[in-house]
Amino acid sequence: MPLNIPILLTWLRVAMIPLVVGVFYLPDGMMPPHVKNLTAAIFFIIAAATDWLDGFLARRWNQTSSFGAFLDPVADKLMVTAALLSLLALDRVTDLIALIIIGREITISALREWMAQIGASKSVAVNFLGKLKTTVQMIAIPLLLYHDYLYGVDAALLGGWLIYVAAVLTLWSMFYYMKLAWPQIRERSGIAARAPAQK
Image 1 (cartoon, one colour):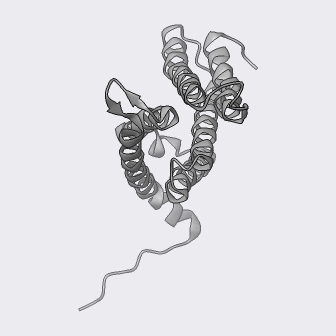
Image 2: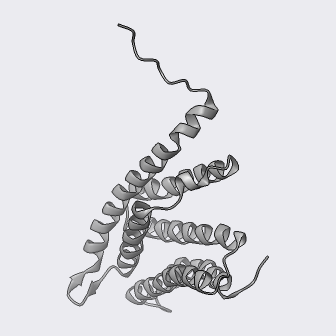
Image 3: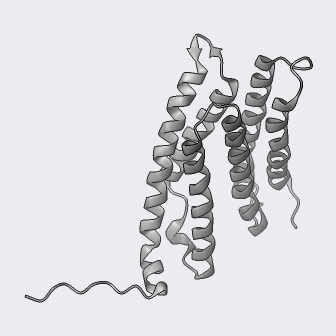
């Protein structure tokens, strides 16, 4: 397993996941609810920042590796899933929103793994739509974790709207990737295209 700063940053992101979740299990006497919210939001923002930084440094220092390419998206999905489950427990997101976002991540991860096995991974490479979905998620989640007013802005309300936008983008990107992969799925599953009706 290669060990360099980009991979260490990715491991740091994984290590911060229990901090984001665990802060809400502290007694209120040890940490008041508003401090828990702020702390969880800060932890998530730091973790999200390492997502950008590790990729930037890996490319800048030419330290990309197959292990890093595997670990980075796993860390991202674990971080988002853990945060969504915490928000679900806090009744700040609906079960439908959590199911859409987490279900999409599982589905596309499985799709990409299968496409890689058949040598067609470039067909479902991350594109602008996927990056936009991730960006909206990474803004919505810390706002929902914070769940208070920030410079006069209701973070809970703004985060609530953004997480719905993220859910729509999540479905959109999932169907987009499925459409790209459909020719390979059809070919290998034996689904024959229907011949046009003869006149």
